[in-house]
Image 1 (cartoon, one colour):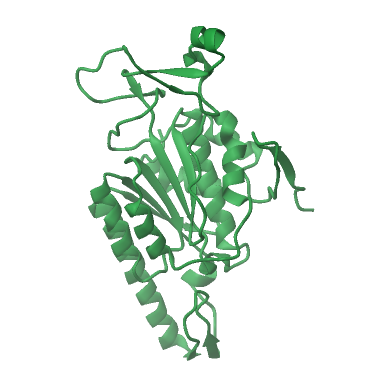
Image 2 (tube, one colour; image 1 turned 90 degrees about the vertical axis):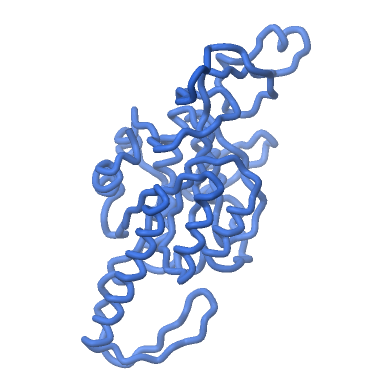
Length: 310
């Protein structure tokens, strides 16, 4: 039996029905307790967070005021201003900084392939990193690649986790635009502060490696999780086949035999290696995630070995 939708009330009193089948369960959330995202770079924050800055000569001192946003830590609310002016105003400081975390999830047509669809596992991976970021005091934004929609706000604090879920699922548009490489280029052109960028995609766009390279000169640090189904990695096909490009290409007629499948596997391996090399050469990290493994296995495997989380 599938999990029933959960109604979540937004600040505008609008109910969003969110299907929760792919969301993390209590066991997986317990696995993430106490973990923190572990970037290699230091990023300038905009609000007080819980991540100590590595910059020299920064002391514990008041920096500025800013408006309260949903999910902010109420310990830093200026209660005097609230009492006098009835305005929620936050104090910011210079001793600590928040980390901007961008969860870029591929929602192009190719991600609907497989049983379960790759998009479900991709969302679960992003949700895990989002939960860890929120619990660690980071500013987390979910962005869907391949669909046209306005930019989502940053979410802060673990209390905003289900709002992040709403950002990932609510009002899914039917109008999908372009491939994931085009979407990454569009993100690179956005005027956003540098931060930790998690990309979760099948990475099958032929331009994906070039698109990823564009992110690094913008100051971002990239974590790339490539999600593929076992039938894509090691297809078991024979005979005459008609292949359809799920993202708009022309159909191709092939004969699947041993030679064809060996060539397919070689090209896929070369493509994946080029993607991994593009990410790592620029200081990012890469992992291949099969949809037939558990989220726990992924997090305790390469993600743990390479220190994606502390």
